[in-house]
Picture 1 (tube, each protein chain N blue to C red):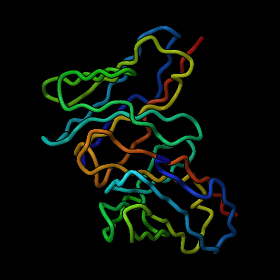
Picture 2 (picture 1 turned 180 degrees about the horizontal axis):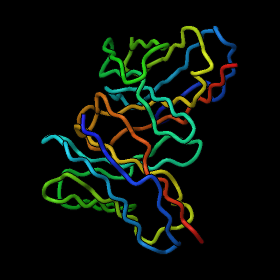
Picture 3 (picture 1 turned 30 degrees about the vertical axis):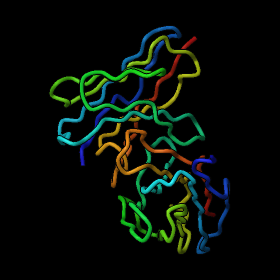
Picture 4 (picture 1 turned 120 degrees about the vertical axis):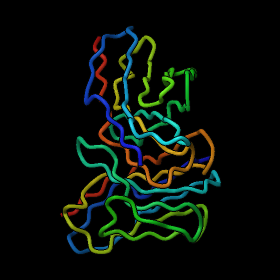
Length: 111
Length: 113
């Protein structure tokens, strides 16, 4: 089971781009990288998933280098409502059989 | 399409009592799982299931039982509640091989006194 390492917390001003990096040195060949967002008193919410290179959706971008040992979640022009905990997960793409979330990165957006 | 429904939302138990946390999904997901989240911590996997009739332990299974008799339901049973089981419990489900990730329920906040 691939272990991930993320910064514990980050601060950013409104309107800035935020990049959160996740390290996953022992990622397996068939593992995907998935990011989740969690607001207080709510369950985590799927943000984005990728395997290699770059993936973009309406919410975020995910950058994965060729060696896939790390990944970066990019949130463009954050607002106060982006204040949340962000989790990086590594697993086999869909129904992970045994996945742990770790402690995530607490992003605080400052006005 | 309700997604993942957890009941109850809040519960207070006395030490030694038993109870069942309910989880139901209407998306025909093969995979379901239970997590607990303690203050300031990430989610820890309790039990999971990859289909009806198949369950397995996560990283913190002690004190909890699960069964999966149907695709839709995955109840979590606390056998004899202890204060250490005070936590927020989340149920999640997903397809086995699709890039949509997990869908989580809204959680059950359990206090054991």
